[in-house]
Image (cartoon, rainbow, N blue to C red; front, side, top):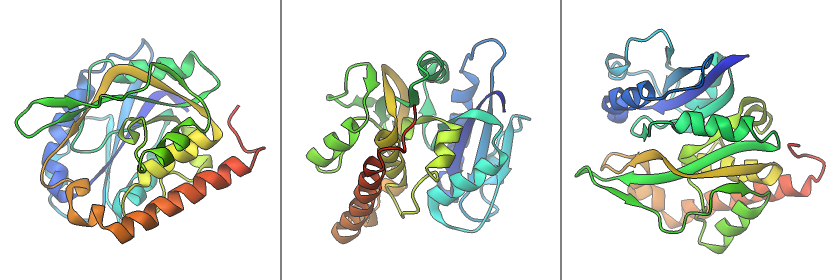
Length: 250
């Protein structure tokens, strides 16, 4: 592995036209000397509508495969990963300047930390932004605290899984994102918190786009029966990891 941050993006055809904006946000990153990023874009499916939106840059690798939703696309992209750290970036979102450097510093300065998250602003269709008014204080997120908050607040985590920055070995050891139709990143977040302390950066690291075509805005995402099933298996995985007292990062 090299001094590379591997940025992983799952994309499907309806969101492909946002890729140039995500790319522009990567170009705005100023990593420490000797570091660079690679961008692994993986289409969930094999359409002809995504490739034209993939920027021409040698640091970008584009792949396609059978339809299996975001978790499978991201996992397949990891086969091309060179970095020791993995950053999630959804196709329709944008990083803020300095986000990768802040994430990298959090893990390099704190060997006991396995993952990092940051503040998020919702990017609304009219271009305005909206923040979450209950962010934790900047600093360590101890093991189990995210799970406890999630269970006490109707399955809402105190930090946003779309901002995850993870040690690659830890990500692979946990099996990556959960094989779910949605909430796969929440499942990973809670699994990470079950075995490792994390870090929260109070400075905004992501603009989370709200638009009619996003997966989390569809009716199926809030279907009561499916949501309860997703949350049940997410919690069961996290509890099982907590119960394995010898299975922890540092």
